[in-house]
Image (cartoon, rainbow, N blue to C red; front, side, top):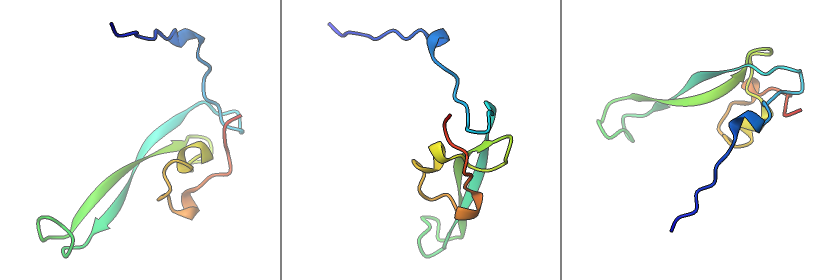
Amino acid sequence: MENKIRIDISQAPWIECSENNKLFESKLLFKRISPLYSPSGKEEFLPLEAIVCTKCGKVPKFFYEKAKEIPEELKSTCSFK
């Protein structure tokens, strides 16, 4: 018999950055794939999702610590509060 854990989401805290912001947006970054490495033999673009703070417009630390490929100029100093 499988035990299933039930989570009461109403009891979970909201994520808030150090700038007191609770709103984040999903944005896309694109990697250019050379025709030499592309399965199609043509240049391709690979979309990668990033989470962006709506207050500062940059990627918060709690996201880019897990997504190491984020360019330095897009990284924010805000983090979990």
